[in-house]
Length: 305
Image: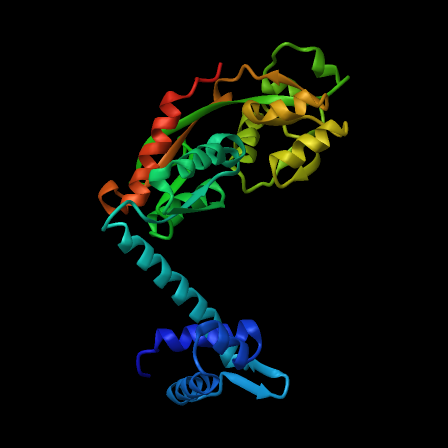
């Protein structure tokens, strides 16, 4: 098969998105007949039709749908390459892909990213952020799928470089009027006689709490399992159980009178986050600038406790 032409792939995506060649031609500033010719040449090159043309427009064939998915990925990658290469001339430009744990996103990371992007010097930097579990974050960074990852510093980074980020404290969210709501502080083990609202088993929080319960010779009793901290607070506020949550993200719910927060005395309740990456020399200028900004934000922020 000859090398596929990027312009033809872009036209194929436009036709499939818009449903007909006339609208795709108007969008791409080309004649419909020119699109038809390019698509025909593409079909000849791969040896199978990619579009079904009818009175109502054009639809991809099964082969066309498979090619369409690859075309979108190729075009997205080419756009990223163009943006990253632009960062080496003129000002700092480019696209940075970052993955982070739910805890990091729920706390200060989004605020730090917003502060980064508000600075005039960073107006041409695009940041894509995605939530993933800690073990997946390390794998994606190691494989070069993303530039930066943010997760607990206690995880095995497996040779990746890392920098300290922010700290937080885990605490217990309890419904108003709950027996534990009167406590000024407590150990996690004292919560095991009560129903818990937990996160999914694949999360680092879930694993850590189960290890703590096992060390105490106990098991956790779940009333509800949710997918994020926002849902956990809502379920606790409804009186269905208690939940171990990051203290920093609890203020909104405490202010609304939905829950009360009780500090945990356990040493593991004090956590540190880290930013990991393959090697600093491999980072694009945009990713390096974001890394330095996040580290500085963490250094300048008040420490919890």
